[in-house]
Image 1: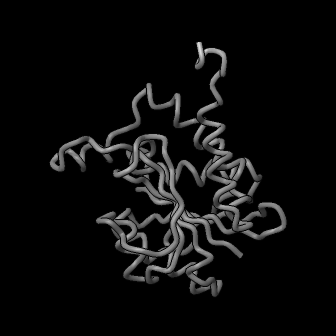
Image 2 (image 1 turned 180 degrees about the vertical axis):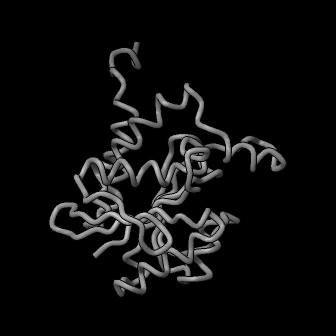
Length: 198
């Protein structure tokens, strides 16, 4: 069983914030794979479903970002899910907007949601890092992550979320490279070769 966690802040005011891209990704996965409706559980919203042959729990902590670990650990402990079977989807300042990376273990790089999960679960979980770009000035980071995605961002955001939802099964099968490759092709279709050479 996999515990799929999207990070974000609860409530309508935050729904389209850059910081909430993890929630957005989990919502799209739940929709695409016809999970059961979300219900309140473990200080969050939990939905159950299947991706391929695997049972998956999708969790959106309702604790606010800084306390995400309480919700994640409660769900993981209840279902006896090993940290290696927890995949956390979150925003990443240090990646260009629209880029993504998969990683197992390691530090939290100052991300408050990850810092909280580290404290409650340890660092052995997996992360799917979704780039939101850096504002270029440390003083502007908070306002950047808590600002809604711009209209122009929809050109990469919607295809990215759709592609993640479509190919997430590859991550569950352990084919991280295949997943990253398929998403890259979806969001940046191959250019016409004749044009490149002309």
